[in-house]
Image (cartoon, rainbow, N blue to C red; front, side, top):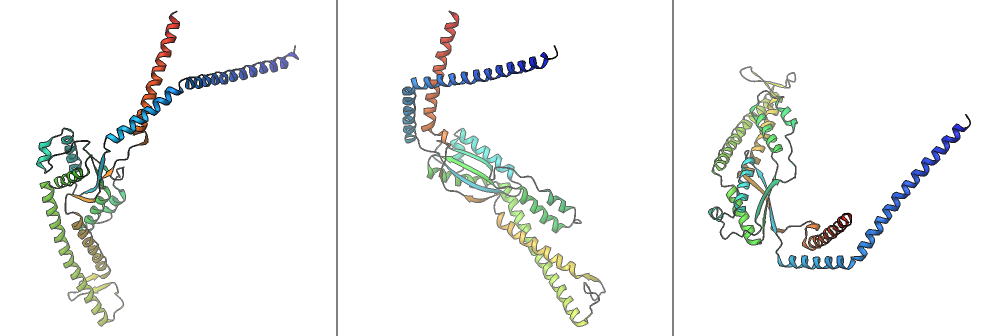
Length: 330
């Protein structure tokens, strides 16, 4: 009895393997039959499918010739003085009025005989993603003891880091009218009275800051020049980092040089801001009209044949299901 145990085990394994191979063969056989049925179906309907593809391509080509392609102009802008929310709100307002075809509103901003065909305004980040403020700049603030000059510089860097450029896209049919409308719309966006006054005050403050910095730099240059003269006369090398004035007050010369460099950098930054902040929304680039590139499968010459062939398959599936349902009823 003990000798029959291993033999029975091997026989069981052989039966199981045989059944497994038979199941795999049945699966491949069913797949092959399904492929043959599909092949025969396509073969029987090849003429119809080919005719639908040619007809759809011809219709798509004809529609492309009849309908004008949509054009667009991209305007790259940079919000100044925390005007990002205003920019997005006013663009939403413009788009809503365009969607409603509000001629009264657009006439009020100087756009007459508006061509509403496909006109649309869209805004979004120019880079496609919105960056967060770099924490490295926030950590720098903790290293300075309430220094107004340094705080202004760091604050400006933070705003520059967090304020992205944005893209306003104007879509239209007529190139000339669309481009003129885009220019008038940008003028309307920058006509906000609040930000115009705020820009003027900001620039006046920047000019005053530059003037004060220049006065301080001149005073520092005079102190440094006096130190140089005294050093040449006294020839004292013991206190090379400090100067003793007439009232016996000691001054850190190295600190004077560092303060001068900070003032120079702050002045340079203010001059750049004066150049940039001429408007609430700075226009970095005003593009020319360009044709909108549609995705390949979004073109009529591909879309229409796909729709016709898809409808044919749906009709065929419906007929097949109806026939099977009738056979079950019998």
